[in-house]
Amino acid sequence: EAQVTQNPRYLITVTGKKLTVTCSQNMNHEYMSWYRQDPGLGLRQIYYSMNVEVTDKGDVPEGYKVSRKEKRNFPLILESPSPNQTSLYFCASMRGRRDTQYFGPGTRLTVL
Amino acid sequence: AQSVTQPDIHITVSEGASLELRCNYSYGATPYLFWYVQSPGQGLQLLLKYFSGDTLVQGIKGFEAEFKRSQSSFNLRKPSVHWSDAAEYFCAVGVTNFGNEKLTFGTGTRLTIIP
Image 1 (spheres, helix red, strand yellow):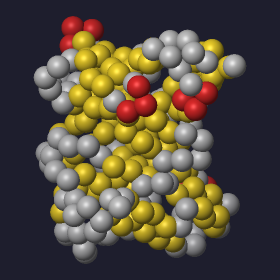
Image 2 (tube, one colour):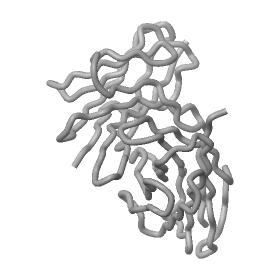
Image 3 (cartoon, chains in turn blue, cyan):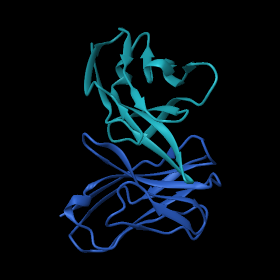
Image 4 (cartoon, helix red, strand yellow):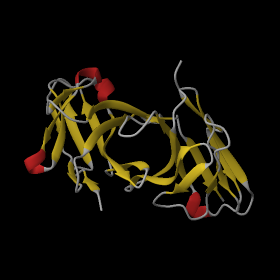
């Protein structure tokens, strides 16, 4: 089944404790993105990747890092999480330019 | 910069009634547009999309949307809603900018269905 998977689905952590949210897609898609969803703000792009080893900032990159060492994986790294990063995070992938983005199930992160 | 406006934060509709959710976009180039639905505790599911061609597009679950360039709108419609349609609906415009393929989302419309 074609899908985007994320782990963990739920995470409660404390300020400053490094964490990684994994994202994997099995569709051989070139493009991958991370979004965060906050009430009243919709979804906003954090980082994106056009291919292996090619990543760049989206609209709200502060406090986040990403890497793309393999085509299928695009982990989101929070080196020192803070409470304002409490949010619902979505990973997405798409085959190519001007195409449909497919979303993972989301990761609900709470930073205390 | 591109933007998407969904003017209705919350809409309540009776089961079996018709539905229209409004979406207006601002984008300098030819847009490609999407509607996604998010059920409680779930991810985002694509309902339909417009890239070019016929301005009336059909989607899943009996939804349709009409692209009106003159009004910069892409409203979502359904002739008869079901209780299972209760969810949050997001309109999005696809943007290509220096290699970044990004979706700019509206803030969403929460749909409540009453018996």
